[in-house]
Image 1 (cartoon, rainbow, N blue to C red):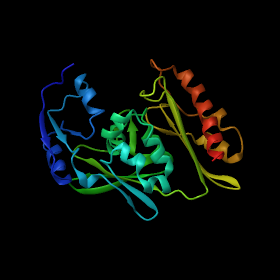
Image 2 (image 1 turned 180 degrees about the vertical axis):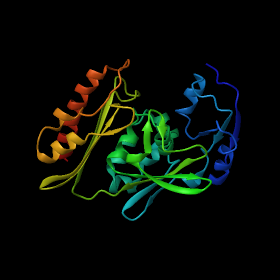
Image 3 (image 1 turned 180 degrees about the horizontal axis):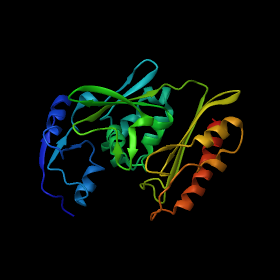
Image 4 (image 1 turned 90 degrees about the vertical axis):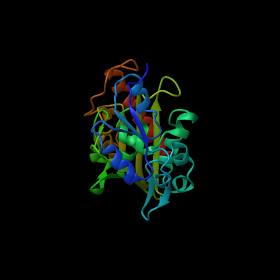
Length: 276
């Protein structure tokens, strides 16, 4: 379909972008465009103003930030996947970024756009949730930091308010005793995950600080707290992986199938992590 008529403006800076999106209640930011443009073609989204921030080089970077790695919101998935700092200090993030879509998507899509879109079937939201990452959100009143656990509010709903934009994501550096895995099931290579699992823990003799986050098992990415406790206790985390979830039923699978699949993938992810 053809999108409804809209005005287009290209932002020259973060401040300019905030000024532009604050000028209209229904303005939308355009970064990579892989989420916004399809919605506009279907007329699910009908902004009167599209603000292009894709050329803001100031928000494209991967930097050492002490105990964490700072990633600019407009850093492309390809650059996240290939960043030496992330490959060394947080290989979970770089690995998952390399699994997103196909090469064309990875060379245009951005980490900030993926998080701000708030799709519970996306890979990176679950990963930043498992990592307890921090997300900076800028507005005309300044920059505020939102914990990943508080960022995702519902289907396509996040803590980013009207007239605001994501500017940076910070993920922790993982130590040498961290083990991790990310697994997902999808019907075709470019499809969204029917179910995905991010698993992370410290292993120093015993498993400590386990984190398991689920993709497509509810309205937002979820922490599988019962599975985390089972992993720490040496029990079967797959048996309780679907506890507290509310998966959808759609053309990719029923809710019952997703619950079963979550158990299988959590069990496999934990086994893979412990095998590293």
